[in-house]
Amino acid sequence: MRGKFITFEGGEGAGKSTHVKTLAAQLKEAGIDVITTREPGGAPGAEEIRKLLVEGDTGKWDSLTEVLLHYAARQEHLEKTVLPALDKGSWVISDRFADSTFAYQGYGHQLGREAIQPIHDAVVGKTEPDLTLILDLDPEIGLARTLARTGHRNGAEDRYERMEIEFHQRLRTGFLDIAAANPGRCVIIDASQDIETVANEIWYALETRLNLK
Image: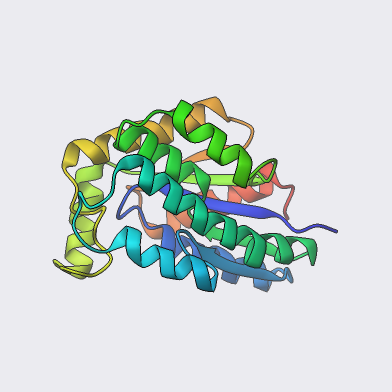
């Protein structure tokens, strides 16, 4: 039986990495074989591309160039990691997937969905997550959380975090619009709540959407 593909989405500081680990542990306790991965990244070639995207000056790439880099990494991620695992029957939990490109580049950089969709169709095709959990949080709170956790990491993986607040507000709108357009796949989780409450709501989403008991 083919495995389930679960993705976590949201802005900076929403807690995706924490809840990916928590959910993976819960699924393993339930006897489900699960792997965790991330984007950009998740495969050797994709991790190399990740460095180009998340490090360095905020304005070093044109928005369309960013899209092409993200989808180059996504092609590697899908072919080397996600699809083989799903075909083996493993569940895959990914910290970000294609919704992030539509939100970050489509909304944040204001490129628009129309420019991204043909590239998405060529790379991703019909591979769609079974469930997408969007951790929604006020961008100012999320960025403050990130700063409290890491401080300024010049030259490290903070390129998007250093973009202007208006960018982060636009991408939050993007994620909410994506959720509204895909109610069968997406669940919005209020990430301003405490960690345990968020984890419980995530598990409830799996129970109700994926018939997991």
